[in-house]
Figure 1 (cartoon, protein in one colour):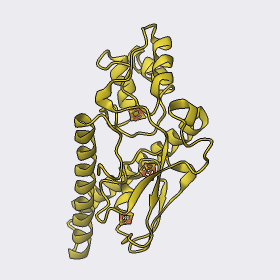
Figure 2: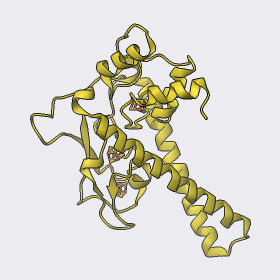
Figure 3: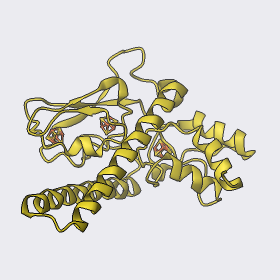
Length: 227
Ligand code: SF4
Ligand code: SF4
Ligand code: SF4
């Protein structure tokens, strides 16, 4: 049973967009929600939620609404990731970086974005070694200029939360399997595979940290030009 802080964090998390984009400066929406609940973060750090999201948090917490913190970026139109098939080398790094499993593909084959699942978080861009992923406006011109919750919905947020939970569970299973493999004094080919997995994990962690650092420096959301 969650304590009072955990229960409040769950209520706050329910109001966050669940893109898991890290633009708030936390590793995911749940971590930001917990920081707000613990009094460690203000309510104005989520660009995807925008002004409406801040207003909802202010209402829940009986606080005044604040302008979006420019340190975290600006409220802009929702975007989708697109992969250039001519350049993709099938390295799979973007698949591992996508928090909601919105990229499909197998090693050494062209990858593609599952558009309805893409939250526009842009976390797949930094790890791509050939810079073949770009962010584009929504194809429907009626939606292309919409920002914040007018470009998003509770249903989409709930789906993204579930996909992120599954993504994390799978990642935890892979790590557990790797740890078990290490304990059994593996033969050479398995050692090579584990070493490769560790290298990929390190690359992704570095890319994620780079994205967080970039967002601490620039108020703009990541764009292809910026990356
Ligand atoms: S900025 Fe991104 S990770 Fe942070 S709460 Fe908003 S959607 Fe979630
Ligand atoms: S495909 Fe890229 S932009 Fe879309 S959700 Fe996945 S990581 Fe984010
Ligand atoms: S990271 Fe880039 S090159 Fe690698 S699979 Fe993804 S899109 Fe293709």
